[in-house]
Image (tube, rainbow, N blue to C red; front, side, top):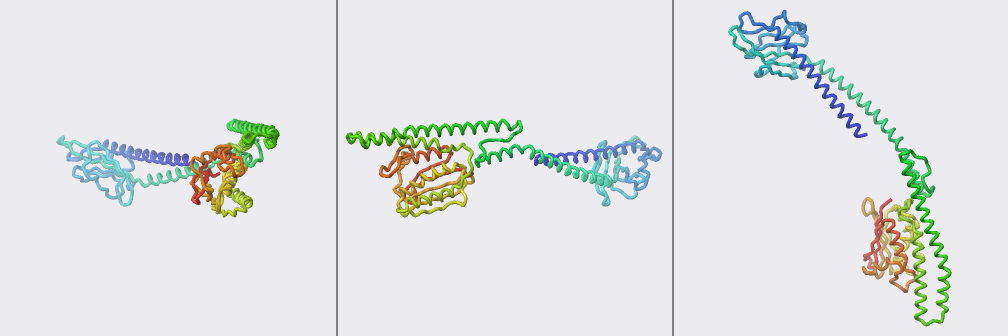
Length: 437
């Protein structure tokens, strides 16, 4: 629309300039014809030392009608007026300087508060002794009507330009709204899919958009099928291994074996339990590619902190929470609870007296969530190890060692940055950087 407005304005300006140029050229051509008619009526004076215009051969009525608006003068080389048309009612000044022979000089001048077109031509004419003498022929035309017509033309041009441009903009706006209605419908259906009100695109779309929605439906169905397939497979695996693992665990406790063998049996059984739990959580976690509605991270953090304060009530942890009023994150709520829950649980578990949670806007598109504790902290090598599945640095604390590994997998699937470092409280700091929804 902006391009259309600019194009129409530039077109009107170009048209106006072309019309003005053509009108001025027409005025100049008309005055040239008048000078040619004057030259056709030029005669020598009786004494032969100057020239005059014969009234009998002057066929322009305006030159013999007083105050007609068309006037003519002839000047000698000393700028003395030697002839004027009968239409002249008041004097006109000569053109300053010497006019070049056979060269036209056209311009618009104002005389007595009135605009005039003025055209001058320098000529040479032989006298009675065949001596060439220089003369200036100057004609004047009143330009009031010209400028009035030009003003009316400009008013008409710009009025029609505004009307035409407005109509075109209205038509373009209506056409664009009509053309983009299918895309607006696509947006509404995506919102419905995010809100889990429907599983795919259900509306009929024009031929230009139908391939897009059909391919998206195929992609959604394939993703849902794969997720369901993974869930079923992992559920079957978990149920299939649950009983044998329970039997092995019971036999390990009852077996009359020497201590090293019993420890080996228990270690391998626990290892199998860890692998099954880890793979089950990994398969059932939500993929970052899935269309989901935004969740409020601040609400989830508040909810988890309230629950963990009850779990670790005996430790009397002091929790400092500084969160933005709203922290929207496009992530499945279950995955978000898994990630934040594991990180907060570790902070409560290994912190001594204080846990600090801060959430702030990193830049226009990213948010940063920081979870710090005042525990013993970890070195660089230990931080790498805790992200490996089944690794537990604290064997005395209950757990299977897969929590942070699952966290790492989930944040990677959502393209969320997870960094561990030293806390200002003296313990471990976990920072999450994610895009706002």
